[in-house]
Amino acid sequence: MTQTPTVPMDSPPAPSDLQDERLIRPTGARDTFTAQIKRIRTGDLGSLPVIVGLVIIFVIFQILNNAFLGPQNLSDLLVGATSIGVTAIGIVLVLLLGQIDLSVGSMAGLSSAIFGVLLTQAHWPEWVIVVVALAAGALVGLLYGFLFVRFGVPSFVITLAGLLALLGAQLALLGASGTINIPFTTGLVAFSLLDYVPSWLAYVLAVIAAGGYLWSSLSRSRKRTKAGLSSPGPTGTLVKAAILLVALGAIIAYLNTGGNTAGVGDSFVMFVILIVIMNYVLTRTRWGRSVYAVGGNVEAARRAGIKVNRVYIVVFVLTSTFAALGGLLYAGHLGSAGLDSGSGDYNLDAIAAAVIGGTSLFGGRGSAWSALLGILVIWSISNGLSLLSLDSSVRFMITGGVLLLAVIVDSLSRRSRAAAGRA
Image (spheres, one colour):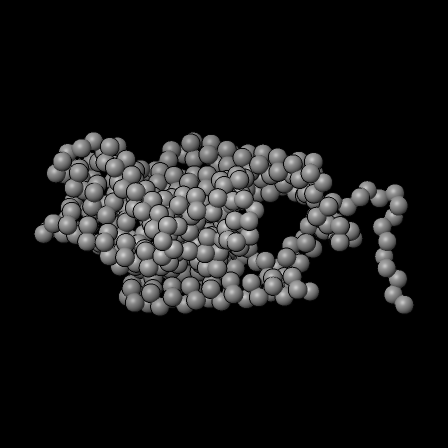
């Protein structure tokens, strides 16, 4: 007869979320490591596959061309990935609901066309044009949300129709020439392509990032402890914050060795700040929790009192607005607004970045950081193949394979979690 282990009478009560696991309390480093292994075995892989894949990509391309990890190339890679990465943030949001927006590329193209026409032909101030372009994106998203909640039209169909309509609007704005050159003296081009954060400011931002992580983690631990839930000890959090600070400082120092044309780009800093903001909104606000709830089980969320229709509308608005912002950055990076702005692989890269980064196609699981991780994978492949002077067809095939692998991993993870839940 097997004897059931008991907890000593003088031991403190286990946290309420670990009542059925009293002997596995993650209070120390060893227990925390054990808990992480258990999460991985049950299919909760998090960002681990993406990070491992990114390291493998870096190693392979560095072996094939030692200029890949050079400071100049890495700086160009980060700046080049920003525009599609910003658009991918919106894709993450709509995927969390189990929906899709196929028109983000066309919205980005229309946004760039609006900027080019109003700047070169109407001669409006840049900041006014940016506001108009973002407002256009918000209005398109509002229309999508209204059609979705009012008539129940699938988001796939709505945004596919939007793709065609926005593409037509872009062609009409650009006119017969099809391309409008944007002067390199404009602020948008400087921000998107030319300007880098001063070294001292980059280090200050690194300190702020590490300090923000430390404060956020300790604050969350205090709240969990107060609520009677398990929480990691402060030592581990301090170590993680220190590692983050050292890693960011080392990256900044290395990028700055590339001279005046290398470093941390202004646009990339904005990209990361947007991710941090959206991550906070998704994980620390009632609205963010509502997004996950609706994506996980819409009927349960409705019965819980969540205003489901409002969540859908806000997400569609944000998705289209992020696409408009990405289009502006893309136009600034190219120095032109043309038919290629937002067309071709832009749409697919934005969607693929969100999925490859770890956002589930089935809704309810993902993170704002998926946009950063996913676009780094895609852009690293593109950049590495360009250094090797390989045709773009190879990049499409490799990216497609990586995307398929990401979906397979997601499906297997869901199956493992379902099996663990039944057990």
